Image 1 (cartoon, rainbow, N blue to C red):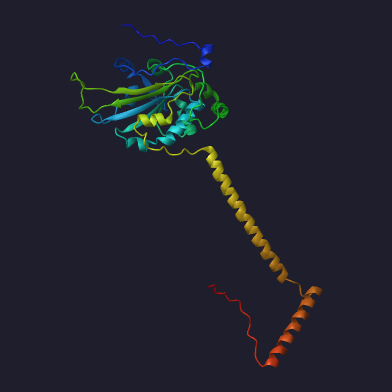
Image 2 (image 1 turned 30 degrees about the horizontal axis):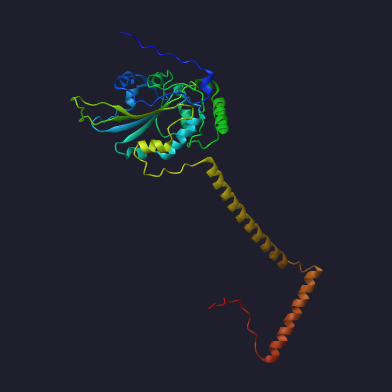
Length: 326
């Protein structure tokens, strides 16, 4: 029995410029059979067969699984892609589709970095690791460091910002910074569809899981755009929800800060006016100014009493009352 040997392509200067030549041909039945039992690792390092990711627990019904192969776990481009995808396609919306759909992520780094990756991306999908990269190689994905000529729609950070974030994550990871995976490796997206067990092919044999669509990356930013994924899953008529961004949070905080400062200024102004009024009322009677005010007040009271006596009627006290407006 011949053993297929996987060769590791060497990096060249062509890896840094232009798109690599790769096709989007669907994997054949034979190719899928070869990768079905290859292992992937969860965050605890526990192995699972690749086919377990797309084979439904209820084998009597239809199901669909979008498997996304990302680059290394410190790739800022892939992290941005998953942030946008998670915001646009939450698991609750996927399970409501016909057929019920799920998304699974596979990276080429060590599995102990998966928790860090979930924190950084807020990814809502299960994530596995294929550090051997056998799945990448057998499913036709290749290696490059080319950025491509076009900035993708899913990138909401600038490229320098994404690089700085990746470096910072690597520094925080310490020794694990070298366990993120092959920096040259690029991935792709594959939709696996599993028909109901009652269906059969034209020759009478029961049908098995097939790949209905795939896309292989031609550069390090060439993930299939989110609108394309939505269209492939039957959501092209629905408007994706807006993604919460870091800058929108800054705008909200800035507006709140302005409101708080405005209220505080009004409070200060009101407090100052009240304080001035109170200070005017609190005049020390022992001071010269206080004595003068007391004398003026006594003279005014005497004059008022005299006028009241002369007219033979008491003057009613003046009371502030609301004025009716027609």
